[in-house]
Length: 229
Image (cartoon, rainbow, N blue to C red):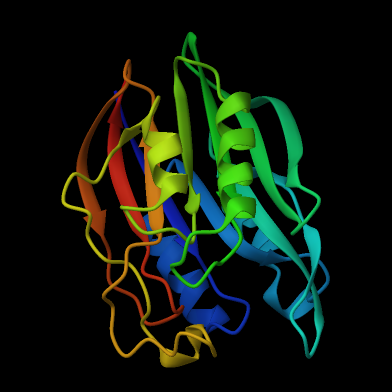
């Protein structure tokens, strides 16, 4: 049996109609989204995916973006039964969260984690590393998928921490950000040249067909893979 797993930071300023069109066409079994908003009815991706048959776990946190307070976070969606769900705060210094869904597929249980670590503008940051360590401590050693916008390049300490026990499904380290310079007022990226988005798996799982997919709905590109069970 093969499952499609999709991960995407849909961007609080993204084209929501295009986000929905992409997600419907993708028809993934398991989806991890970041920057899902808790209090913006016109961007209700949870309601949209519910109508398509997805259960979910959502972990919003309030963040101060300088000119506004945003309540958003990662969410995990599944077409398969969610047996158990948890949300975790990864640090109090710069609030970031993880959502966990334990999903039943046949006689097996998969532990799915979605997260969005703090943005350090591609520079070393102890808080981001603290978040990575906390996240890794929560992940079971088998049958686990950890995905999200880690806001960390392949050579960062945060990714080294996660890679100490998890397998990065993208051996090519393909860039995923930024489609738009507006994706970061500090970095002002001019093209898609930085990898910030990852799907990690435990070594007992078998993944194939990793892809960075095409969409202009967000500043991040969606990523996906096929998981064999």
